Every structure is written in structure tokens, then in C-alpha cells.
Length: 110
Image (cartoon, rainbow, N blue to C red; front, top):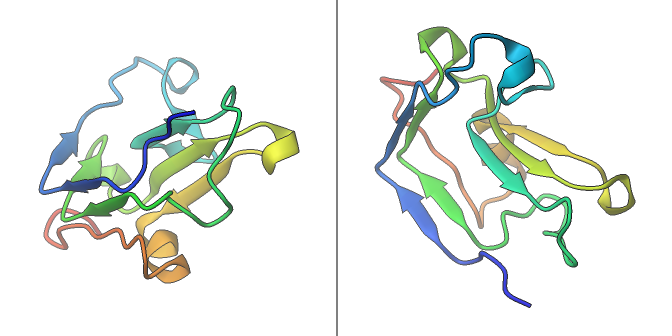
């Protein structure tokens, strides 16, 4: 079994990556557009609750538009048997785990 783990994703701009004409055709879940999508729905092993599996996201600018800055950031897609979907904002991620700290350029994200 192979898993994505222990990677560093930093100094990137993910801007305007949700360009669907309406929310039904995009990654709009839990009240906002999710910028990072981790699909573990059909995985035989899922990441533990509160974990990014050793992956670190830092110094990235992520948003669909300026109005979406600081809202939905990451979704872990899981089955109900594995805890259902987990949604993170940058604020929630930064306060839930020091090991996998996510940061955003404060000029671009609020």
C-alpha cells in the first residue's frame, strides 16, 4: 500500500482554481470552495483524524477569488465508516496540529 505522506508543499499560488460556472459543478462544500482536495473515499487506509499524514503546507496563497480568502482550505474526503469528510480552514488547521502546520501569506489571505 502506498500513501502520500511526508511531503512539503510551499511557496505556491493556487489562485482561481475553482472556475466552474456554479457551485454545483465545483468543489463547493461545507459553505465554501475547498482549495486542497484529498480524496481518500476509496482508500484502504485513511489519514488519522486531525492528521495531514506528515504532509506540510506552508507559505501558499490559496483562493478562488479575494472574497474566498481565509475560508475553506482543505477537505479530506472519507466514507462515513472512516469519520466522514473533514473540512479545514487555515485558522483551524494551524490550531489543531503543530506537526503539520499550514500557513498562508498574510498579504494574500486573511
